[in-house]
Amino acid sequence: MEIKIIERILAANENAAAENRELLDHNHVPALNVMGSPGAGKTSLIERTIALLRDRAPVAVIEGDIATTRDAERVAKLGAPVVQIATGGECHLDAAMVGEALANLDLHSAGVVIIENVGNLVCPAEFDLGEHRKVVVASLPEGDDKIEKYPLIFSIADAVVLNKTDMAGLVDFDIKRFRSELDAINPKAAFFEVSCRTWHGLDEWAEWVAPRAVA
Amino acid sequence: MEIKIIERILAANENAAAENRELLDHNHVPALNVMGSPGAGKTSLIERTIALLRDRAPVAVIEGDIATTRDAERVAKLGAPVVQIATGGECHLDAAMVGEALANLDLHSAGVVIIENVGNLVCPAEFDLGEHRKVVVASLPEGDDKIEKYPLIFSIADAVVLNKTDMAGLVDFDIKRFRSELDAINPKAAFFEVSCRTWHGLDEWAEWVAPRAVA
Image (cartoon, rainbow over all chains, first blue to last red; front, top):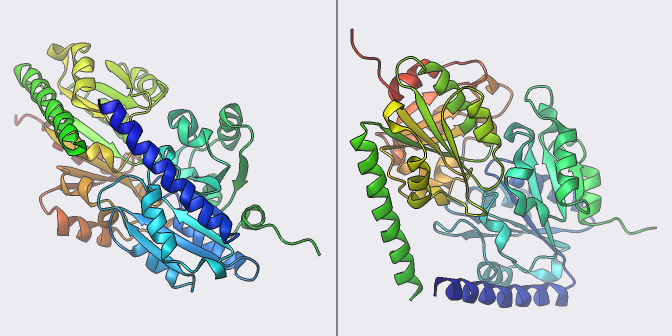
């Protein structure tokens, strides 16, 4: 009985996700679902992306948090349209929440929608939000052993962004090991080494999010 | 209907947790449930605690992970008895899993049992494992805004351990802000500033885990 109900919940989510994707496609706006541990730097990456894409693909943001509007306030300061979802205890976003948020964004003027999921390396991986691509943000201080310990989220990522590379040398992190474990479970994922603090590597990332039109 | 089933799952967990607590009490062994984000330093804290308490309260460890036995291998190297729970995708430990692990530990020779939960600041907070005290490990690189963003887990903690204090100055983290937000939602929690890398602050922590007998 429990299993049937879980299937029903997931089926309802799939339907809502399909509606979100249809709405986004209708407006020709791609959407990213950005996931990662608390403190990996998801909001910082979004802040930098807003700045880098300002002239070619204006970013609209959906912020998911259990509580507070802190991340939305950070994004709003940069002038980007933003909707906050407060999950009220839920450990992940679902497609219905994102659907409500999308209804409150002006998709005509958006070049890309970035959805910041709840900080959690586990549960968000199981819910399709209607996004086009999934991104996982990891960071050097978290340690280089996370891919095999949290395999689902890394195996379904379209891109993995390794943040805080400015801390190489200050923390023990073997980037080659991390990269080779990612290759083993998800060889097709794009991989970016960045520092949101120093802006290192962010141009390549921005190019992946919204390629420059060829002149 | 979903709500009833969730209540039934939680009630079953409460029963299993009560059994675990009875078994621990019968053996006069206190148990800690150590929670925190991926990479906060839970395993490192346990490694240091094993070393510090070796002569007065031998630590037995239950390691919870979604996949891999890496953390159990780290602990076993120090000679501590350890049982690995692989949750196979589950985002938290539950009391039944811990009950099976306890049955595989020699509680007569243990001075304290430390349970390392899955790296996750959300879901583990909702499940009583039968432990006596809950501990949350946070760390400087995660940022100082986590208490209000993940309020449940910090509000139920008996102790909060702020790790990686050796990185003060390298990352933006206002310890006073963090401490005052903790005081606001959970003024009774013990608070420790530690660095598992430099061993700073760990004697006070070890004293909280297993007080030295007065001579």
